[in-house]
Image 1 (spheres, rainbow, N blue to C red):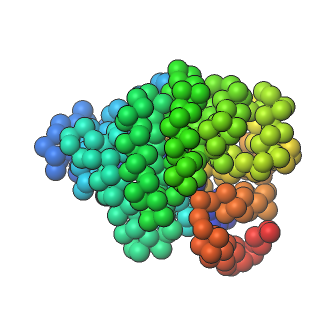
Image 2 (cartoon, protein in one colour):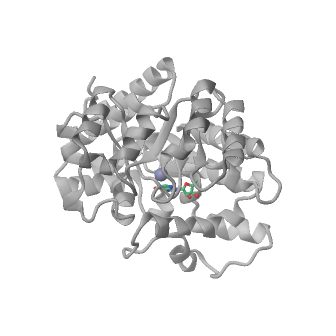
Image 3 (cartoon, protein in one colour):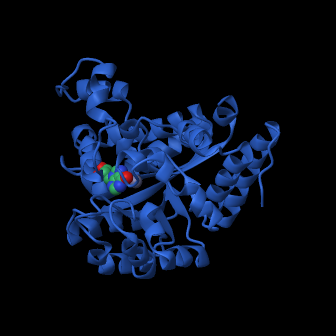
Length: 344
Ligand SMILES: O=c1[nH]cnc2c1ncn2[C@@H]1O[C@H](CO)[C@@H](O)[C@H]1O
Ligand SMILES: [Zn+2]
């Protein structure tokens, strides 16, 4: 466990609104003169974190409704983004891609572009203060209409290459299939921003295929249910599409029924490019170290296998080649100090 904590790690799939600290929420509420249902951090946690009995992604997503009202101004967004890098540093995560849906932060007059600007500012301040590299990913939401999603996309394009690294599609996968978003993602692709899409989490392998073949995704969020179709697995392998797996979250949303049933080893043996991430540290009650510990506990992952996952994340990162190489050097240096060597 100590080695896991010290190991340099990478988190490519983490939602900004899923990692607000309860202590921060208390301060945001006080500054905004808003009432919370509990007076202290332990009392707030049940409102922010899922229980073991969580039954589905839809139920899981309800936790976000609780924090979003407090994240409607630039100051709050900048602070929680800054704290993403602080939390990353505390767990020896040296690169983080932090995703969020700007349109969820426009309820009190902030524009989508301003929301993106504030998040980018918070991440960049955190990069300087904590030595953690950070990029933002802008999320379009399945439950939003085309015009809202186009506004989010335009905000992403405005910050492309200056803080925003990619575009994503998230939300209720069971109710809104990816085919509804073909025209939106055609424009996303034309903008030059790379695309990652949540798929095969709460619906079947056809969504993974659609995301890659029709929407142009070059990475897939979760992809747990891709295993139900051999042809989809072959397509992921042939195109070397990284999977952003989030084990603790995937158990909670019932993308799988038990650890035994989690396809991570199977995917690695099939030659897929697997990465491991947190999804939502507060909502899921997790950290990168906890994710790695779970893999070592339930699947006997060795230190070398965990290092392989970190190497995969470097390969999958939405960074320019020179920046990626710099990250590789940094990670290799930290690994070497622990007596571990970074492959490839
Ligand atoms: O695992 C997930 N699957 C799909 N959507 C998610 C997941 N986690 C969070 N969000 C959605 O993304 C929004 C912006 O961050 C969150 O508000 C939540 O609705
Ligand atoms: Zn997610």
